[in-house]
Length: 371
Image (cartoon, rainbow, N blue to C red):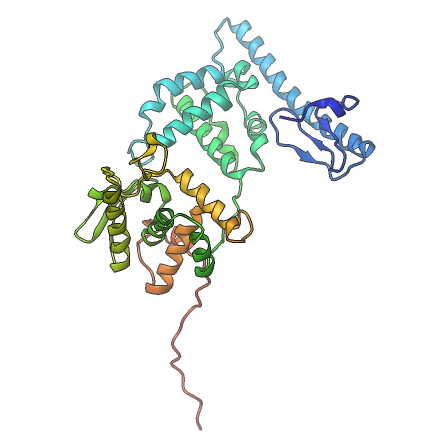
């Protein structure tokens, strides 16, 4: 939300100017747009041009809504709105929706989809009135517009809309899927690599058990949620067995002595506190009663890691907990060469998690020319 307009009463709606900072525009649900000037007169010129384009887009959508209402009135038919179809799809199709390989969606993905449909689609003012048959690529682009500078969420929302409208197409409710004409937004590739020096400096600022949890993430080198969800029953015979949830790959990781030591440390740590839990990494007795013995959340450890980054004298945000996995896979590759430790199905995904520059190696087979 924009700030209260106490100091901006003379400005048009959506334009904000405050002393000591650039003016900015915020219309509807769109993110604020920095105008690059502190001068109100200059900001007003930019604002009215921006507003002209904004109003034109809204008018196009409103026209489509009115036309669909008139067409329905002429045909004497009930109008199924996008919002109405979303509610029906969410309650009847989503609970049994599967991945492309036919396996059920993960609980988190299903919950994310439901929340996004309710908040972004069903409560959207355009979709409450727009007939499902009148959805066009332009309408979808306008809908996705507020997230155009957040490519990850933009793509996630686009994917969800495409899946829902694909069902509408298969049911004969629409003639084509308008989302298919919209390209995904490019997502910046994260290339951050945590050096050993920085990793040790960060984990030194964490509690002992938190630091050991980071070591476990590093050596297992999988998604934090998969590692923090490990149970003691997943670890026996010198092997850690679990399923990588995102890409549904069954993993078996043979432990070396140091990984065995970390596992043994957590088992001993729980026993000393009298904590009985099937999970390996749990909240200690020093935490709130309702958390004791429950698996540590990614959010908790991520927050503690970020705090430790600052405490170690490093730039805030330079490293995150999720950078530990690519560090582990990069170091594994540098130590032992190519492997399937990350559970990736393609070479492209393997490369994505190797954040070091490895020189191309070749053996020389030539001899100096001789006469």
